[in-house]
Length: 322
Image (cartoon, rainbow, N blue to C red):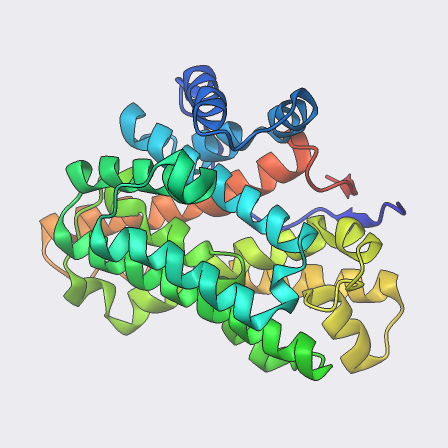
């Protein structure tokens, strides 16, 4: 695998980590074993090296331990699902993809209690996660989470249609859908639970707050496109659904110049977040306090993703110029 060199990315936010990181990691490793999501010692070693708990601990440094354990479980489950979809080529099979989506949503929409014998590891693990979330969240958040899962699958279907039709993604179309391909929407939508942030839906729907949320999601995904480039190029699809290669094709760039351009897109995205965030506090004192907490939580997500990707995980081999 050729390792591409990624320039240092602009992300001027503080970095911190949840003090229970080791306990969260131990919990999720046992959870993977309990639900037979790991079938060999080699797989367990692989996921240990990828250090998903560190990503959670950096992204939600002030969340409650029980919530972060649950979110680390889900996050790891989604990474495992992503790997299995790629390995089994389900992403190229519309019928299999739709059946998997239907089974996944059934668990959430009906509060289905699954068993390993009948439903298999993935759905049974999802059922366990959802059972815990039903006790730790309100119906409003639960509905938002289910919609976020639907949006994630819609992004996957968009990608599947492109693959089946032999089409490469348009830049603007890709930027519009990228937050759902990477499930970054779930990361921000989780903050009511993982960050104990209580804002009304009216505030979330305000144009500036919506914009800050989308900018955060895109910044995370654009950074991920850079960090995962080497791995994706080595795979069969040649990183067709990656900001770098889309820019390379659109502007007839060398790979090195396309990497620099993708880094510039990321940095401009974060600059926009910084410029806009100070304008958000136009409400009453209590709302502004919680909104300030929300903005900081978005910053932790962006910074935590970069720190995890460049310092701790083996998931995305690359060379980072920091």
